Image (cartoon, rainbow, N blue to C red; front, side, top):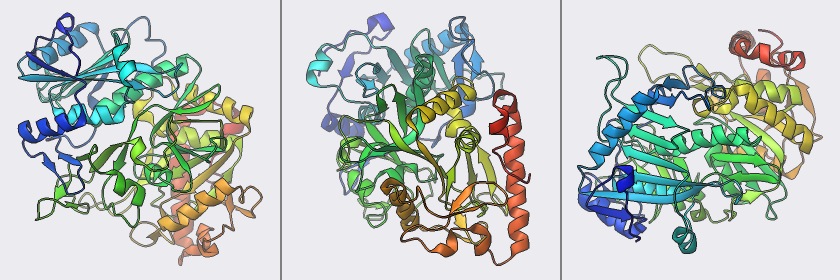
Length: 529
């Protein structure tokens, strides 16, 4: 480990562990963090306390003259003044200075050598240090020697609460970013994913500023890195699962940039959902959760060693973080050429979208800006049907610019590189949630395989009567009976009613974007709404 003087940053902790290796972080987590365990596979099991997911309503961005005209202010990017940020930073530093030890992690964001950023993380939990050591790109020994001052610093004092925002009844969680100060401050949440997404938010500001497209997507390529594909999708749509494909090279599972010479991963690790994980259904991810990985908020079985991946008593958002090289077919460095295919993943719990459709460029823009998926019923008493979720560009919580900025960049790159675009439904067929059944993972994998093989480029199609998209009617190794939704429902009237309802939801959501898109894109939406 290196010696590091952080007094200029207001840090005077007696023991500073700078770029501590994994074994030492394991040792400290087991010694100093209540509940941390070593499971049978060798992964560290850690717990994030009361917060087991992100707190998007508590994210703040400092309003500054240099960047305020670029930021799409609103419910996603809530403004904070510099005094408020300074106060939060001082509170975080005061807390860290009370701790016995401080962990400092240096790493890179972005595999492209011309576009990578130097990130420094300050935290007092070894679990947080190991998580970011996993999720950032780990520098070589020579790179650490010349690392120098970081481009961006994360000050994580998540164990300590923030001053209440907005009065006595408001949240005591605050995640604040200043692009000008090049810092992020975390108070009131110990959920490690806030750090990961803070870096992504930074990249979502800087990359489009340089006319590069930052994307919430996974990416794979063929063995040569020439035929790449990117998979957009919200949480639960299969973005990470489908990218862990033994027949393809993995570029990354969540965050990428499309530049002038191809695509590159932002991260050095993967952060997969662990709920119902098994060696049979997701072997690549299952084997990756070993020594050097972090399992977050999972429950151990009675033997105290094996993980019960089906137990959601702590949270349904159980997660596993592991270095990308733990996936056996990862492409290192994580870069590839321009994508030949773009795949929009949606988990349609209403069961009315086709399993796979070919989109025109205008339809692609419509669905990219819409960013649709659905959440299933049953999580709250009295909820009996699915609910729609629209997230612009499949990543609204992390966007900084107006969604139109990202859409314009995507459209230009699609046209320039003649990229094919597909809409793949990983959700329900034969009826909505509770009536129909979820499309088998094996069938979705067969669809993705067919896209990559190029066999769907000239496959027969049927125009969907409600959404106007061309549903593929033949896919090798997929039953033809599930490829056209209206043929799967036993009750045709129920199908028409449900499809009409979803089409109307699309139109209502898209209304907010209509003034910023062409008439052709506006016309590419549902036919009956």
